[in-house]
Image (cartoon, rainbow, N blue to C red; front, side, top):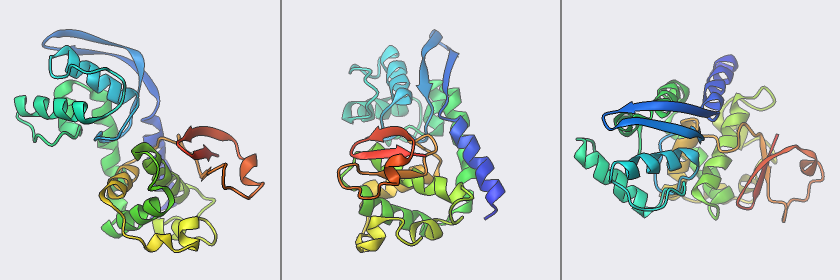
Length: 240
């Protein structure tokens, strides 16, 4: 894989997390998206954030959803998405992908996923499975977003000139990940870790480009505490 290509593609994914304000035209009138929406990837149960909130807002306005627009993709949101998909001739799986976004008029989300098709084409099923194993070993106690975030750090390293340019090279770099050192990399990943790996490969980056993460309660390296913190998700601090 060419490093320049990967860096360019990550830039596309990084652009996808910018906040946007847009007007959407629908048969029911204009929808004014007045609040910033964080663009991510395919949305499924366990996801959270501004894009989920926008999804809920649209579903609620059209009578498919009667819960809170809290930005949490829980069972009620899954049910509403399935209902919407059924009524619009889509596969009713409760997962908001490109076809569902198109039907909802979430055009920015559609463009994100179109960019991601190019981004993940370089990776194999072996890359995804290894990434899932590392996520499971490192973060299986974290939220779904927290697990995707760990995968995103690995992918950001793949794209960085500071690290090896393959998934296996990054994961097996000496002393890079505790799960490799203590053998947890050999555990069988569950479906949540597999989904998180796929979302990370697709370009969802809840860390906004971070190259490092650590648990401040267990970290022993003084160097890691010197890195600039970008965000905290669960027990992990993500930094650059």
